[in-house]
Length: 515
Ligand code: XMP
Image 1 (cartoon, helix red, strand yellow):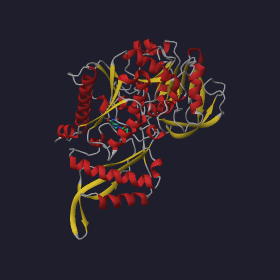
Image 2: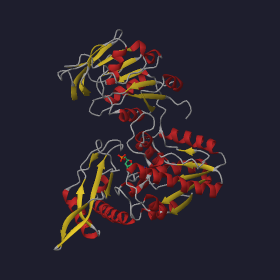
Image 3: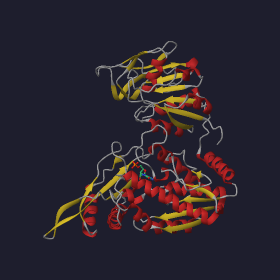
Image 4: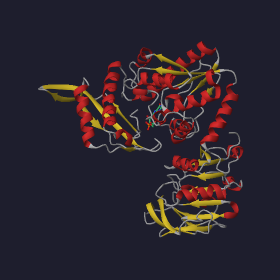
């Protein structure tokens, strides 16, 4: 979609930044998150319909706090500052921000707020409502030319606006569901202030992407790395729509799949779809490369690099020269630390192509989409419900669920334990309540007693989460009876396991996977 209307979310390091981006997209407006270090020239080139300054953990007075050139306020582009973003706007334009030394003026959580409903942001909502606050510093005086448009008991400027310059700020977080009418406020900014038309719809995404893929690929061949997960399956369907049999989907069974997963993927793709599908079994190669490797990032790099090698061989064999495609989505890129974001872990499809591999290019048709958008595209393309709503499975597979060195025996233990977990969850219907669940082999041995004998065997951990977007997640409150049954069966049926524990860590501070 060339020249699509875009809103920029300028990231000052706040915890809700992904959420802001998702909310904007939910309003059918395309947006991109850019770090606050981005050059203003780049913003001018994008020529966005609007800019949203995110929150951030700092005080505008901290020396190390992120700032942005005040030139941005002169571009004539509407800006909405949220929390820290609002304080930065006030500070940069001559308002007064008070750096709180005690907690008397800080607000955290649900806060009663009074809005001026004449203001364009709050037009049509009730005058009094609850907003979600999370701040210590506060704005005591709005800059000249600004009107105060919301207040709370302790916050004299809970929102401010300068309609002439299309500059708006809110001290609270409209993106958080606890803020009543928060989505309406964002919508009002996008539609009434920025005058967006709301063109970001999955149907138009599909049409535009298919057209663009056709043009880019021309008559060349494409190999797609297919794992059988949602992302690569949707990428396969899009590419197949664009270039038909010029596409070969390659499923690499690296020996790190769940029990029977390889066969499931093969059956699904050969039965359901009329596309070139190849399964390549290379368990031994992957395991020998992983021998002796303990470090999670090193393991991810090795697995990612081995994948590229297999795909490269296939491209040469099939086409001589051709494109490589993969199902990368937006959060993969963010969490892999591209740009200014902190690196959490390198997703397998983000390790960087080895120097001696020369793809004609890399195609990532879903690289700007969030998971829920990928699923919506999958449904629009007519993929079966079970495939679209499958639980995610990481590309490095059980390689990042066997903690430390990966061996064939450890993979076997984990596969057996994981299969029991899935079986029990499916049987009682509880699987549907969860976004993702799996077993982990931490590589810890503990003492136990079985029969009358001492055992010294492996510990298995169960991980289960609920989440909307996998960027944050809650640990799932699985009933004890189910956990009890799973534990009993694993200990009785899987040789060399004598203890099962349940992981009760949310994300953050944990991540979903253990490595
Ligand atoms: P984390 O562990 O980062 O996981 O909280 C978030 C989601 O991403 C999946 N995940 C991956 N998926 N390649 C993938 O395709 C990877 O390297 C990878 N690492 C994590 C994880 O299973 C969860 O759904």
